View: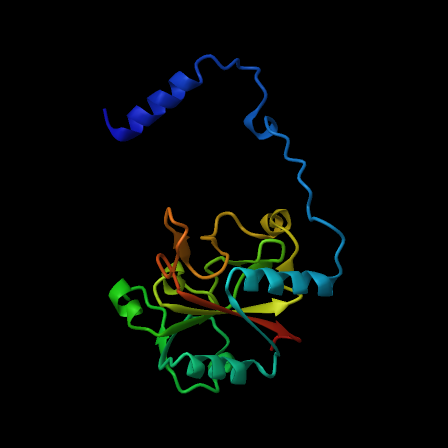
Length: 217
């Protein structure tokens, strides 16, 4: 008997006494959740996102679309980054003002290769204001999941207000569950039994989020 047969056998035994006319799984739990908490304007929702991102120790920047290339160049220079990982579909204009060496997202890149890269810049699928969460879905402007997990510095660009939703239920309605979703709430961190916080354990030690207003190009 292999592991699959063993697990399925346990499932069958666990369900043996469940009547065939029992409540279907998708109806067994009341899922009448609030779609958002409170009544907020679009501007207030964006402010809540910025507040919660900062509460999670992400560094938040704001700029217009025209200011974005200069801001990204300044962030990379301030971090001392001489190389930056770039998803294949990232808008080329975003990094037009930096001299950092572009490292393309390649399938053959190893974790060791990516660990030598100073920073990564990506877009996002959307951002959730109530939880201060950025969601990536592996689209061309975000790249493979590993390029946002191995480099120690992640810069994520969020277009406001278009990519901002209030709550997780609203986000789930918009996201494709078949895509490789990565939910990011602040830089990578964990705490031991003494509650000593350690950052950079299983992802970037530093997360910088740029909230960009204005029409995309």
